[in-house]
Length: 228
Image (cartoon, rainbow, N blue to C red; front, side, top):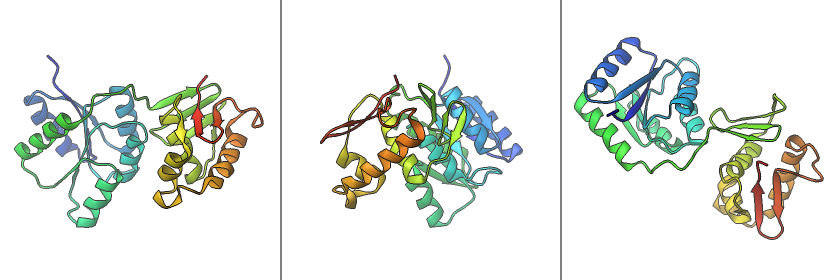
């Protein structure tokens, strides 16, 4: 029987090698990534049961990797870092990490935390890192949109809005729900924001913004993102 799958993300080869040996000896299936780019790719393609992530990576910050994974997946993320300051832990947990272990660490404690993270994880619900919609490719892990193979530049707010809609594709996202998710709980009555940003997204993403195919309005209710 194949054990749970753990993706180890760290740029210290010696530590990665030691972790892989110990984890495999305890029944885990192990994949490794030396940087954030490979971590995002492997999370999408290999589908680990838990990600063990160092924050100090050579290309992306660990927080960016957490954000990229959380853009499409609920896979548990356990941070393994030499950073022991309280604000680092808070930032990682606020970004979407499930647990935080500081270096140096006891292997039995790390194994227990990994097992606990996997136990707490909700069953998968058909999450996909890349969503295709006509000529659009929405990469939720890399937080970007391609239209006809060309990257579309979105503002952070535009991305936040399209991310919520795409993650709920095919389902109505109410106006208050969308406002709270993108702007925060103090903005749930600012429906004018939605009209402005919906128009901007349609100009960038729809072939015919006046007759949208993907970003649809349900008058008085909210919005639906359709992939067909």
